[in-house]
Image 1 (cartoon, rainbow, N blue to C red):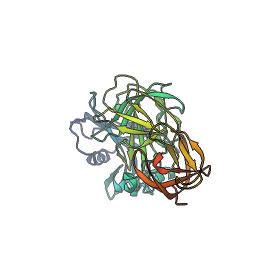
Image 2 (image 1 turned 45 degrees about the vertical axis):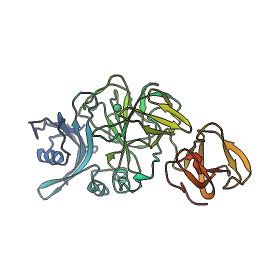
Image 3 (image 1 turned 30 degrees about the vertical axis):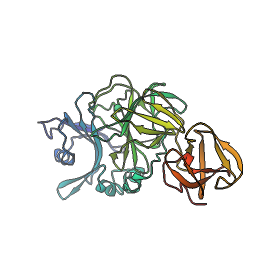
Image 4 (image 1 turned 30 degrees about the horizontal axis):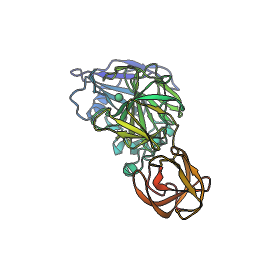
Length: 385
Ligand SMILES: [Zn+2]
């Protein structure tokens, strides 16, 4: 139960009363403070195609702290998408102060906001949305594709925007249609209809959005585990946009903002952007699948793992030490997952993306050239040996 103020253009601040039931208290009639609604709306970036702005007060306490979501609803037209944020508000004197998800203030205030649970303080605060320093060089997500491991779904849309121009999102369809959490996190319903759009905030600054869902969970901060049911693929356009067939629009966010999904790993596939929106590919080892093909969900790549990419046919030699002069002790197949214990310098090799003299010592004691292992992060992935 929650309070929703759906603000239409020209009806700024017109808030309909609704009821809210705090977890440990009696029901009471609740109407969001129109001043609070105004203050949340004042934080939003200007946008000229918004058909309505929904300010949703999920929680409020007696000390005048509040927490909720806000969505800019888009027109129901192709290539239009809503935008949405979590927000925190607190009273200073007789006025509301509001911090919007993605602002440095939101992370700082989240650290000890009394309207957040301790786990939420962790993922939304400065240890989660802690800053974008690793953004440029660390593409590890620790996420699976958002469906059952082992299923093959159609990759129906390459990188394209949610809102704005950042190509944060891909479209997926098929399989059993059950959309599952890509990683552990805390889940929030975004649209006033309570259908269509779920956001899950994970650790390490990441969040994922799932849109066009039907029969979705209705959640206001509930914990979800990797693989938990989120909803069914669908055509819901409660918050705007369009859908021409049941699918999930899956978006990647980092530090409270949409980020280009190109280069990140999901289900052991590295997502690649094409020349235009909705074009693109995904790569698992040397296997490339273009939009229109199917993606086998290999499950999440752990932060200390890599995927062997032999950069062509063949297998990768495992050697007894860090360099081509060491004896061959076995091999690893293209696309195999390897656990990297530590790294050292050895002979130079050239793989798909780079030339490097770094070698990785694997969990089985063998050594492979880092040129042929996708990890998504700079060397050493774990530590120098
Ligand atoms: Zn989409």
